[in-house]
Length: 317
Image (tube, rainbow, N blue to C red; front, side, top):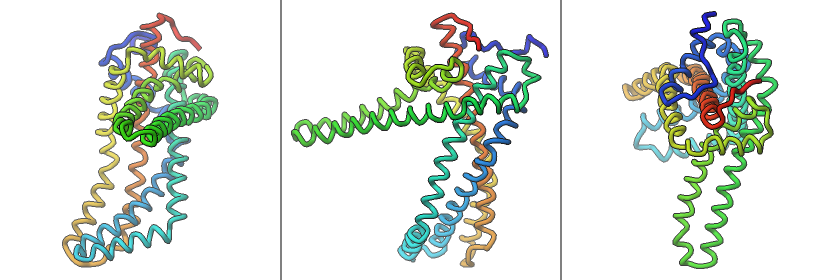
C-alpha cells in the first residue's frame, strides 16, 4: 500500500475536502464495504423492494385503467378503495415490514461505514475484508438501531409537546389561538434543527463507545456553531445521491413509460406481464439505498473534523 495515498481521517477539513475525501474513501473501500452491504443488507433490501414493487404494480394497474377510461374515474376510484379494503391487512403488514427492514438496513449501513473508518485508520486498507466490517457491524448495528430509535422518539415527543401546547393555548383563549401557526412553525424548525444537531450521535457511539445520552450531548456540543455548514454539506450530498440514484430508476421508468404508452395507444387490457415487470424493476430501486454510504462517510469525516477543530485530539480506538 502506498501510504501517500492513504487518507488521514483526523484532520480539519473544509467543505470541499470533506466531499473529496468521502468519494476517495469510497474508492478505497468500494469492494469490502460493497460486499458487506450486499451480503447482509442485500436480502433485506430485496424483500423491501419486492413488497414495494407489488404495491406499485397494484397502484399502477388502477392508474392505467383510469387512463384508458378517463370518463369512468369514479368506477376506478371505487375499485381502488375495494382493493385496499380487501387487502388492507396484507398492505398494512407490507408497510410494517418495509419500515422495520428499512430501519435495520440504515442502522447496519451506518455501522459498516463507521467500522470501516476505524479499520481504515488502524490497518492497511488493502487488507480490510468484508468479514472484518461485518464483524464490527454485529457489535454496533443494534446499538445504532436503538440510537436512531431514541432520536426519533425525542423528535416525536418534542412535536407532541408543542402540539399539546397549541391545543391548551387555543382552549384557554381565542387570542392565544392566534399563536398556533407560530408554535407549529417553531416545532417544525426545532425538529429540523435538532435532527442536524444530533447527526453525529451514532458516529460518537461507535468511535467513542459512549452511552446514548452522553453521545447525544456530545453531538450537540461538537455541532454547536456548525449547523449551517453541516446542513449545506448534507444538502449537496443528498443531491449527489439523488442524481446517482437515477441509474437505479432507469429500468422502472422505462417500464412504466412503456406501459403508459401502451395504454394510451389502444383500449386493450393491461398486459399480463405488466405487474411482474414492475415488481422486477422496482427491485432495482431498493438497491439505491446503498448510496447512503456516501452520507455516512461524510458524517464520519465531519466528526473527525470537529474533534480536531475543537479539541485537537487524535481519536484512537
